[in-house]
Each structure stands twice: as structure tokens, then as C-alpha cells.
Image (cartoon, rainbow, N blue to C red; front, side, top):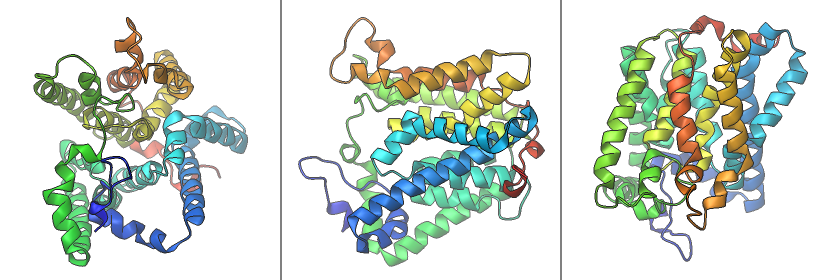
Length: 340
């Protein structure tokens, strides 16, 4: 059983739902070297596609040389530490973000009948994209939310029928075993829970975390409800809040901050207020420099509470100041129209 396997010398094991195992099962018959090549190429291609979607309207509006500007943007995205870490650890973050973003931008925003399928599949592969189903409920997109939830449930049931023992093990044991994931206080955990785990409040930590999660969700819900038609803005803010409230947000999970960073750059270059541009620039530079890893092996007081939580602080800043309602959903063009 896949959930019985642990990395030698560690308590870490496979933590994804059984449907993820079903999707990844073809890799078990391929040579390891080929699997590595496929994973790296997949991450690079999906990152390029995401940047193509996110920056295309801005490039066209600014009148920049399109392929040159896109090439620069893709290089900047691949240099972003969460993307680099995704490549290093062979993760699926950009693949899942592509499923979610494609669904949001070209399904939900366009009112397609299939809207929600991509979000549902991403949720069945890894539970954290389920926050986008909550977004659909908050913005009263009942049909899309039902489609997403139904797709996630259907995929989970298919995996359950094929792997009944693994499914039982995941939902009754592996999912709740936090030791399989890693130490919450490890520096790479850049969620609110990771921030609190690094503070000397062990006994009250879980209660404080619950309060923080509820407050963060309430603020996020208020922001996205003020501009329900701005699906691109909703995608940006929901990606940020997902990173903040998850119990574990490793650095490579922070690829979900990319839509917010691009939204801030877009708003800063397109309007009179340059503050979002400055925020995005500062966040990108810090999150690409690896400066936070200076605090990996020691507290290095008195700046430890700052240096070891830089992703958390910038995520909170993006949640607060990423513009929403500044662009219509219709401003997001279809993939084949962005660069034509």
C-alpha cells in the first residue's frame, strides 16, 4: 500500500489522496530519469502557460513587443523561488494551479457549462485547491460550485472503487497523521500555522491559529464579495488566502501567490497608484533571494520573528492590498486570442 511507504530515515510518506496516486500511477512503470524529465518539463511548460494567461492582457495593453515581453516574464516566473522549489522537489503545484486558473479564467469568468471541473479535479488530487470551491460559494456561483464539488467527489469515488484499501487508509489515518507531512515549525512552512509554531506559545497555538484562520477567511470573503464579477481578482486573493490558512504551506506551495503578484504589477503599471507595483516588486525580490533561509538553523535574534516569516508577511500584505474590482472578467482573453 502506498501509504505504508515512508522515506528511509524519516516519518514522511505519500500524503496526497488516492486519486492523485491513480493519476500518477503511470510514472511507476517509467524509468526514474524519464519521470524527472517529465516533471521538470511539465513544471516549465505549465509555468509558461500561466504567465501567458496572466500577463497577456497587460502586454497587449502596454504595447510591448509581445513575445519578447512574454519571454522575460516567463524567465522571471521560473526564477521565483516557489517555482524553483517545485522543480527541485518534483512537485505538482504549477500543474494544479493551471487546472484551477484555466477553470477560473476561461470557465467561471466566461459562464461555461463546464466551469468547476478543473477546480474539482485539482481538489481531488490535492485537497488544498478546495478553497476555490469556497470562493464559488462565497460569490454565489451555485452551479459552478456544485460542478466542482461533484467532480471532486466523483474522482474520489473512482479512486475508491479502484483502491478501496488505500482510500480507507487515507481518510481514516494518513490524512490526520501530521508527522507524515513534516514539522510545523520548520522554516519552509510559511503559513499562519507555521508562523505561530515558531513562537513560544505551544499550549495556546492551536486556539490562536483557529482565531487567525477565521479572521483571515472573514476578511478574504469580504474582499471577494465586494467584486464578484472580477474573477481574475478572486483567483489572486483566493490563492493567497489558501497559502495563509493551510496548516502546512511549504515554500513551493506559494506558486499560488503568482496571480496576486501579476495583478499588482498590472494595477501599478496601468493606473496612477504605484503602491501595488512596489508591493509586488518587494515581494518578488524577497521571495526569490532565499534571504528567509538565513534563519533555517538558528533563531538569529532579534530579527528572527521577521526573517523566518517573510512569506507570511508578504502574503498578508497581498491579501490586504492586491487590487480587486479594477478589471472586468471579460478583460481576460481566451488563450488563443491573447497574443494574436
